[in-house]
Amino acid sequence: MKKFFAIAAAVLIAVASFAQETNRDENGNLKFGGYETNGFWDNWTIGLGWNAIPTTTTTPLYIPTVYGQIGNFTKAFPGGIELFALKWIEPCYGVRFGWTGMQTVDPVADVVKNLNYAHVDIVWNICNAWWGYKEGRKFELSPYLSLAPFMRGGKALTAGAGAGLYGTLNLSEKWGIFGDLGGILADSKLLTTAGDTYNYWKLEVGVVYNAGKTNWTRTATTAAAAAAAIAAAKAAQDAAESKVAGAQKAADDAKKEADNAKDEAKQLVDEAKKAASTNVDGLFDEPVVVYFEIGQSKLSKKEKAHAEYAIKNIISRGENVKFTLNGSADTGTGSKARNKQLSEQRAKTVYNLVDELGVSRENITVVEWDGTERFATPELNRAVIIEKQ
Image (cartoon, one colour):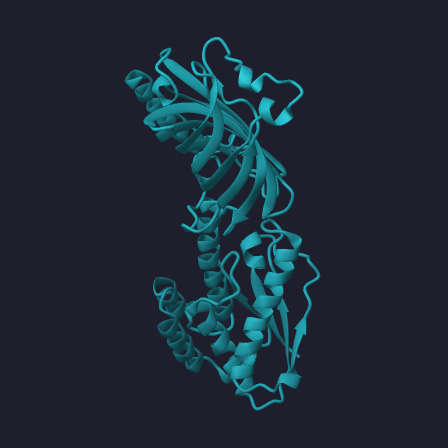
């Protein structure tokens, strides 16, 4: 039995390692890891199920007479309860903590006994491992290895190990149904002194609830968004340099101090004062674009300073300026409904900023996003375009 546990533990570690390195993206390319680890309360699956088959076997299969009454369904197929919580660490693998209660039979005395055991399972999602993670997938199949450190039958207490196959059919983002076929190998002393070991089988069905955040974000996407934000900041500085004479030093300083929004704004103001007044007058005639991080509707400190600087200069001309705000999102990530929500939230964020700077609400128009992308680079579409009417 000790040798069996050692082998089972080694296989558990091997499966976890393999599962972590066998993801594919939507294009079919292998991704080794590549997913952000979500918070503790994200990607939990809570399950409640019912097992309803004879659960005690030896070798060969033992068919007790107490369950052999074909005309009596409840005796032929006794029932039990399964309760578990499954935490997905990454799309390919997770850890499940569960409790199983079932009725079983002492093969010597041929009497019904109750069996309870707690188990910890390493679960491998072969759908995500073979075909890559896909948000909204309806059916998922996951083999698992199980350790049962606590097994009680009657007054006896022991441990066991086993394996099984766990599948889910997702009816919605939060709810689904599951099926589970598995077995635990344990000492015979749980029920009787006869034989060496027993196999305790279970076939279960039940319902599952997916708690917390239920999707995954690639680390590579986050890195690309950061790179795009830097590129967008540099592009904005280059546009200012083309209209303000002698602004090269300001652009170099702004690139080195991109994380210090106040210093960058001050440098732009100082350089603008050196330029001809005719050039300053036309500085903000073009639309102003502020950028957001992926999945966010709150401006970073840098982009907020950028927007405030542009809006204040437009207002300072003394005109009764009217603004048009057009929020957008990139269509390459997230659902259509989520992207529409993000575009509206981003436009509302800039709307509140313009309002706080003293512009009358009657002079602010928010244009509803039509779902199209305006820039070739996805990261540049996570933005709000500010136009002066």
